[in-house]
Image 1 (cartoon, rainbow, N blue to C red):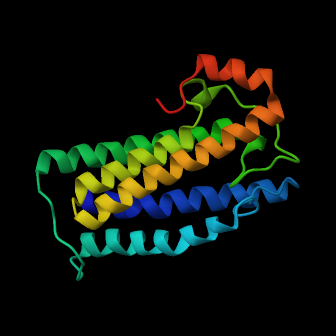
Image 2 (image 1 turned 135 degrees about the vertical axis):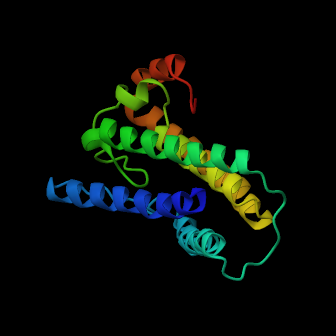
Length: 187
């Protein structure tokens, strides 16, 4: 059961993001800004596809490189709970984002600073949600390669958050700095 939840989590996230990008385009907003500020971002998708394969292969019993580090039914169920929590936080963050949603950094037409909804508990609810999902999937499939992806993913999310924070300081100035004092970066 937990393995199928892990497999379903990933396409659900992709569907939510693509749906939001399409909706934003219909509103006349270019929400897809991925790789515009840093061309190295285009190195991420091949690793994401490999990650998707690893999760699917783990769930379906296909050949996998590496080995499991441990197995615990309880930890696996905790992982499923983290995946669900991540999905809920992700959806809440997308809804809270409103017209300000972007994939990547948009310094030209960023939209208003969002500080309500999911953004009232975390300045980065989408990255926090991704982190919860990565941890949850690792708890369900504790393969050492998925552990490497977990560490690399958390590092990449933090790198992106720090880049976005620099842009947000330039765009919103004091309003953003005051928001940072009230709301934690993650949770």
